[in-house]
Image (cartoon, rainbow, N blue to C red; front, side, top):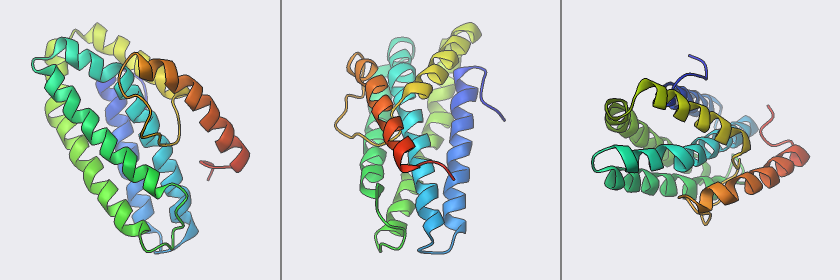
Length: 186
């Protein structure tokens, strides 16, 4: 499965990539530096994915899905918890005794969030919107991921218009930092 297509295909592809990164982390020996590098890749993917959902998916859910405000608020709450874990993980050495329990907690919360999105939210959105609208939303999500931040920013706004104004600038700074430090390159 590759990137492209409607928003459901795009985000489901992201979910599978995150699952693969979590599996790769678990496959490395405890304390191995490769676990740290993979955790950075995981963070980059999760943050980009979350920011794109917050910019475009959840506003669409609020507008077009019955009980959309309740659903979107729950998803944003999930994102906030995951982002706090990512912030705690940021810069932590792979041999730190807190590293593995934090990765395990992150995996649990991300897995629950993915099950909820794929099992409940995506079917509701598919029923509420036309295929053309879902395709357009997929394009917006892909575009947002290109400029989204790559590091956790738990205090940044998670809803429009604040997130749409802040995310591209924050993303630019994050990418510059990543380039200088080599973060995210295997």
